[in-house]
Amino acid sequence: MVTEPLKLHVPEPGCRPGDEPDFSDFEIPKAGETRKPDLKDDADTMRDMAFSIVRVLTKDGEAVGPWLADLSPDKLKSGLIDMMKMRAFDSRMLAAQRMGKTSFYIQCLGEEAVACAAQTVLQQGDMNFPTYRQSGLLIASGYPMQTMMNQIYSNAADPNKGRQLPTMYSSKEYGFFSISGNLGTQFIQAVGWAMASAISGDTKIATAWIGDGATSVGDFHAAMVFASTYRAPVILNVVNNQWAISTFQGMARGNSATFAARGHGFGIPALRVDGNDYLAVYAVTKWAAERARSGHGPTLIEHVTYRAGGHSTSDDPSSYRAKGESTAWPLGDPIERLKKHLIFLGVWSEKRHTQAKAQVLSEVREAQKAAEAIGTLISGNAPSTRDIFEDVFETMPPNLIRQRKEAGY
Image: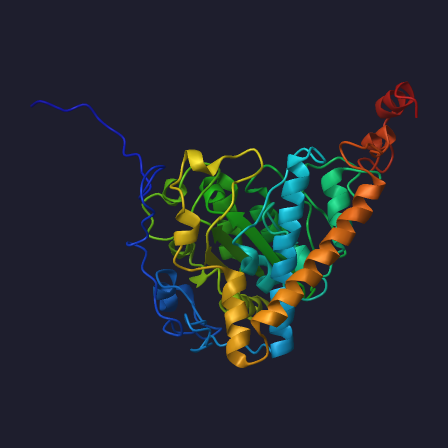
């Protein structure tokens, strides 16, 4: 018997640089078509949800179906402004990095609805365990943009005192757990925090965030085991924006049909949502939050969206994906889709949108001006070297005291 040499299968994306963008194999259910399970339903009775996509907004801007959100026009307008702020913020900070005012920046271009809509569901005291692409959680919660910029510039007013990579924010007050560059850690940390909340008899829940690429790390699977076993009050979010830093989502997904389907192996209810549909993200997150608060345990949510920009300012997406792929993305732009819905309702207009865009840009510019007056990577005024030694030990050990003195403090 002649045996052929063994070979490995290496997944390939549908198109590469030089090809025409092609999403013909991407199945999109009609808005309002996907059913809404009962809060008490278990994973076995809603397996179909992991293979469909919850959508609310039609192409004409009408909101339809069982997931129709209970959001007033004023709340929808606020959501639109939040996303516009996030996009303007991204644009200004990207330009600032290109001018050398900061060393690094990560955008969430095209993904604004995911974080901005989810944050409006959470309550004071709930805790987000985000990645570096959920800045919209802070924007939507009213966190000062100038403080975010101070952190990006690592100036003297940086609340993290220059000890975190730019965009790695942290705020206990705003329910934003310190971001880690070691992707995946936040997932297991969120489950542990949620378990602690339940053990202490509290009423607060946790939300975990992870990208499609990081679902392949061990922390993701460990988190799923603990969340399932103890029915932790946590929302487990997978933001599938189609690309990791340079590999398409099929590399991390493996032979699984969807990321949501991974919940089945752990007995965790799982569903997919149109991540560019603000109303759909809000409705699904609210459903999952109510499940968690009612003692029904975790929910795995796959947000189907698209990373329109580079992975970071250190990345050139043209080297691994087709030109024009972001504009060909069939789920569209989250800002444009919510704008169209508000116009459909008769409470918004193109003129009002233009005015709002100008107002938002002015607000972002003012925050940037104030932050840059304190300091940037170019102008200096960095945090004190003394801060390196602080906030680690309650009682500083002798060796650090000695090193601090050697540094002149």
